[in-house]
Length: 320
Image (cartoon, rainbow, N blue to C red; front, side):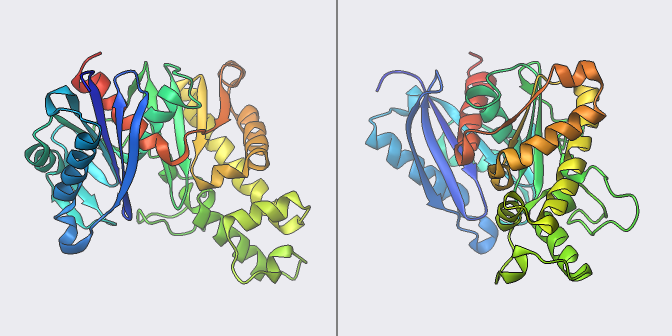
């Protein structure tokens, strides 16, 4: 293959999603390998490089035709130098990921946060529809986000711009958050937060609920019960959606995005989530802000990260 190629890797605590793309963003191939977290993740760069080399050989892609490798990974990091300060699920502390990958692959490498690359992917090829100003929120085990202004990701002075999950929404008696504070949006709008809200409601009174008959309460079960008219589940969804919509409105007043994309496992609830979030957003945001902004469900799913990584190579390394 003689055309220019973009290599991508989205590193997670369990698997590394990888892909090869044409410079246009069209997919050549994608695959996954396990994330080796033994020895504090020391072997991850070597395993990633070996797998990339294998698939380049498979598609007869010469190294000189690969424009670079874009990488997304969890944790706080020094974006400029590609040093991961702390990635709990992998075991990295002050890990020079960029340099190690460049040494292993002999390719230019650019590294960014996993939430940021997912946001870029949705902006470029997903629900963001290549809009210049876009806010992407991931509602999963936690709540992450990426802010795109004028077709570029915003990192902020400390590299953690977009951490909407740690916006404070409960001022008094808020639940503890993994960040060490209490009352963060993540304690309400994440899958784990929704489950906590449901369990608290089940313990608070004897209100009949479909959730009482389950061996395990999940966020999916809460939304399913809500669609069936379960009052307890509906109260949980209503509270969570209202707080999420209000939080998005406050951020939108500052950023004035044209689209807000909701992704992650929780977003699969579809209209049961999106409709009340939109209502709360419209109630809280300035009319000129809400009328210019559309709230949409993400469409790329788990592929958003590698698509965003490919964009990083295309725009930040190649300069196309």
